[in-house]
Length: 448
DNA sequence: TGTAAGCCTGCCGA
DNA sequence: ATCGGCAGGCTTA
Image (cartoon, rainbow, N blue to C red; front, side, top):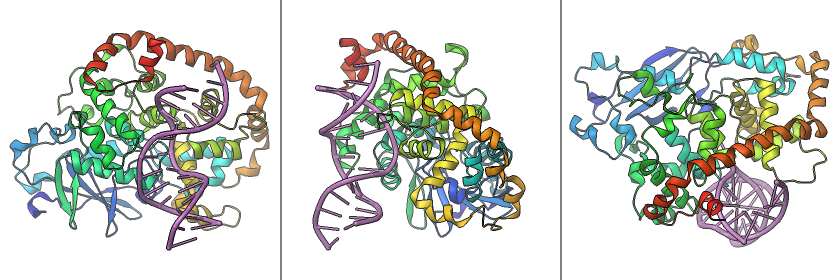
């Protein structure tokens, strides 16, 4: 914690309706932020970022690692390798790229208040739930970290996911520094997770059956996919931070595979073990910048049934692939290109850990609103637009769903099959040799 | 083509 | 208090 490596507090003007870190950092997007003494801390790109917030500003402080610059080239972590060289003068230290990093990480180019207004105007349910949950953004996270974290998230709760990610960083990620006696490590790159011992070790650390998925995914990405494979899947309109900065010399990953699309990225991710539709959408939304990706988990499925009339009269209780696509398509048509952002607001409002907050602001009873919120939000539309409500009701009816999605579903399934057959055949044989015990869905499919 | 178990383990409500 | 169900699913049969 040498003071030499710690910057002074910086601040950037930001209203709570544009970003609320208290909610955004706890709603299950990133699992690495830790709150110590009312300040939030996390390692991003080789440095510890410390955050606190008031009504008008986001305050941030940077703690750089204390080691010699030569160690920065350590191959242990992709992320740490991105760290710029240690600067000598503290005055110029504030001229580093941390502001750009935060601007990118919090996706501040998206005007959140305007988006809330838009979502509320087109969706009375959103207008009803959102006032208690303003300032929730989708974090523009590192794609690899998002991939691993959400593989961990399957059949799991936020608390344990956080513990698992923490263990992954401590055991495989480079040490960066210590805050209040607590060590902080960066997230390990895929090459740090290679080796035959990794799966058993992760199991020992409590990862359960996800240990194999992570070990295999790390192996596939570092050995069988071209460099920059994940970056290629990004939304071109939402570049990764190191591409944005241009200083880290990202290899040309440009139009090698044509223009990236959300669907293409989603389907590509499905090839990886432990990655299904929901995890793929989480990575698309939070790691690849695809705002229209809408992860349908058990909570969102509950919301879709309770508030949007899905699943009525359906014989199957489980969320099948067709219904998954139908719910996502509905929310995309309702909320637009940033539908995943709106989804995260309702998702958070539905979390048990935020139950108190959900009941704190009641639109009907409530003048319990800050000025910033009242400016952005519309509280009356629950009864303001009966015509639109009727249209939505009609759209939500079962026959309409079946009709509109039979075509969509067919196309999706076909696409998936094609990609399976064309993309993986070549790689499979070698994968089996090097990646121990890799028995994926693709190999199974190809063998049968 | 669609559906239902099994999987690891900590948390949380009864 | 101990216990069983559940938790931001995926894979396999």
